[in-house]
Length: 131
Image (cartoon, rainbow, N blue to C red; front, side, top):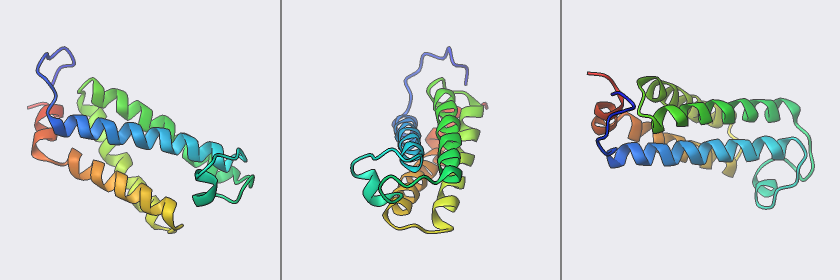
């Protein structure tokens, strides 16, 4: 659909937008936590307090940027936003599962799986993909 379309977004699109935004913020915070910044709660489920894991920080940072770009596409109801968000959420599920790292992985898997199921729903595809 065209971004100028004035029809309201179905609830599935709004849910996908919310979950994608939540994942973008969460991955940005995980990037900071893996950079050595002590973040309450995240430091308990992520890296050890103050530990720097540069590779993980870079990966989470890249994921945050890509999820933010996908979020813009979803909000504007563009087909590439659907494709990018779908691919990213599938990658997040796989990346969080292998290697599995406990509660942080569970949270990522649950949120991205929910976003993926929502994006794959008929109403979301009808709203976001050209006919």
